[in-house]
Image (cartoon, rainbow, N blue to C red):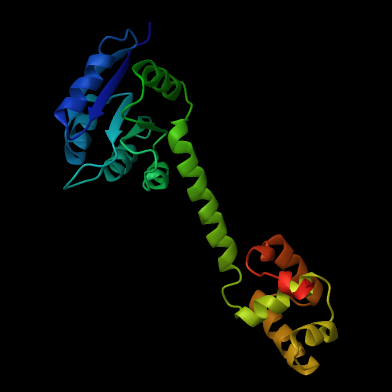
Length: 225
């Protein structure tokens, strides 16, 4: 039977004791060390070379769990780090993923579920508590939204509106009539838009706008009324 070596990291002794009590009674696990800080976690990881590190994400003062995770994985990339949190909506979820953690679970997780998650991690899977998954999904969506918005960053509100109308297939004359502008003025705006987007013609601008979901940034409902 395989035995997996575990390091428990938490600044609260009672939490470490509780986790040890659960895991030491499992036939697959051996808790080889504990740590109460990020700095100590690094030293214990070096000394005991555990297979899995259960890391508290928030430790007051000194090094955070995320920083410790990064440092440990730089020296021991084969180790698997599972982040522990008390909060489902923890804004550090994405930071933990970037740091290389392959698991993210709540401290109040059922003992059998924790055992299952650790076994999944050592088999090569990533685990995220279902209560935390929505937070992670929201952060990914927000990051995607910011990235999309940044592609239009060089456009003014007026230029963004005109680009949206170009994407709808309107001509300069039709845009001028709709926005009560001179056709020459619209032509100048279009030139600035093409330059800002680094495209050569209206068709390319329209494709760029649609591809980057311009409808999320411009409300054309009033134009349609």
